[in-house]
Length: 367
Image (cartoon, helix red, strand yellow):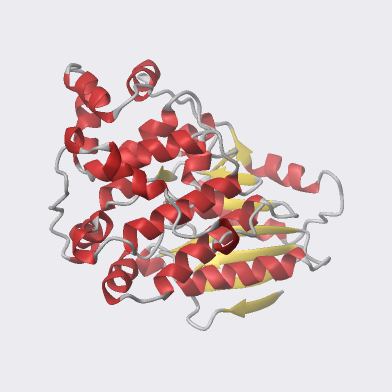
C-alpha cells in the first residue's frame, strides 16, 4: 500500500492493490470541497489514468467517527462568500477546476466507484454522478439545494437531473428535496444498494481484486450489494403534472390550489429559495436536457460567473443567500425580487449569455 496525503490532509490518496482510493478527509466541515481538494483529486485521477498498475478508482468520505457516514456536503460556502466579497481570483479558479474535474470523472478511462454514504449534496453529487458504480446505503441523503442559497444546481446538475424520469429533475432542482438511496436508484442517480455496516469490508476487499479478470469488479459488486428497498413517493403523478408546467407562476398557482400535504410542503420548500434563481434554474434544467455534458458545464460556468462576478456583491442573490445560510445564519435572506411572479425574462436572460468568446472559454477544451 502506497499512501500520499495533501498538505492539509484534506484528501487521502492511496493505492490498494490495483485500485486508486480517495478519501475526502474534512469531516468537521462535512467534507466540503476546497480548491486544494479539487486539485488533489484531479492530480490523483490524472496520474492513475496513465498508470497501468491502477485498474480502477474508488472514492469515499470520512465521517466524524471514522470512514464513511458522510460523503460531501458540497462546496465550501463560507469560502465562496468571503472570496466573492474580497474579489479573490481563487473563486474563478475553483469553479473552472471543479467543473473540469466533474467532466474528467464522467469521461474517465477506468471504472470508478463512489461510496455515497451519508449526505451527498451539491459538489458531492458532482463527484459521484460520473462514476460507473454509484453505491448507496440506508443512510444516504442526496440533495441539490442550491436555490436555497441563491445559486442553481451546478457541477453538471443540469445534465444529470434533467435525465431523471419525467419531470423529477425540475422537482429536485427547484425544491432541493432530499432523497434516500432507494429513491436515488429509482431515479437513475445511483446503481447499487449496500448495507452501511459492510462498507469497510467492501473497501478493504478492493485491495485483493485482480481487475484484469473480466468479471472481478462485477463479482465484488454482487458480493456486497443487497436488495434495494421499495421506493415510491406516492405522488409521482403530481410531480410530473406540476413540474411539467411552462412557468413557475403556473406551478405555484397549481400548488396553492392543491390542499394535499405534498403540495403544501412543496410550496414551503420553494418559498425558501431565491425567486430569481428558481426561474434561472428552471431554464437551466430545460436547456440542459438537450445538451451534452460538456456544453452543460460550459453553460454552468457562464451562469456561475454571472452569479458571483458580474453582479455587485451587495446585489447578488448568491452572496446574500450564502450570508443568510452559512455566515450570519439568520436564515432570512433578502431576495430581489421577492415573488416568483415578479421575475421577468429580461432578468433571467443574462445568466445564459457567456462573458467569454468560444475560443477563450475556460472550459473550451471539454468535449
